Figure 1 (cartoon, one colour):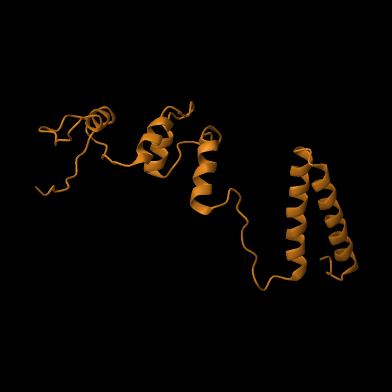
Figure 2 (cartoon, one colour; figure 1 turned 90 degrees about the horizontal axis):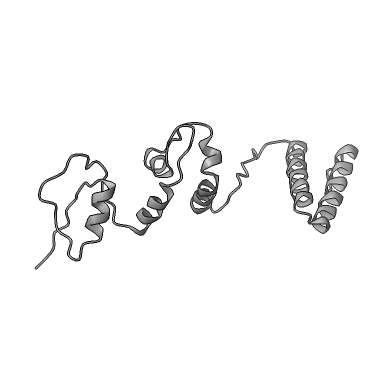
Length: 156
């Protein structure tokens, strides 16, 4: 017998009960509060775990953020920081936004941007006590600053 797919709407508790049945069946009467559309994927169980983490300021859960696409307050960035990093890495394959530089930008402004980036990496290396990396970055920064002050631009 060919099974026909059907859409059902269940609340969180009814969805768990439905998923734990031996043989899935369509609920006969919709109950009050069945607002959440059931999504039968593995990510749903992970999101249920993330519902436990709630912002103490506005009361939004990570699942609500995922469904709405908006946070409730600025504190949510701190409360859901770990989940956001994983989400951004999954979406963009990076955790840090690098941005873009206009192709026609003067070479000096591009070098200034590189200097800012190198200084940021130097602070991070020092904070992580990676002193060899910090020394390498320091030398690179000094060479680039010297080239900029002389106006040659050949720091590479």
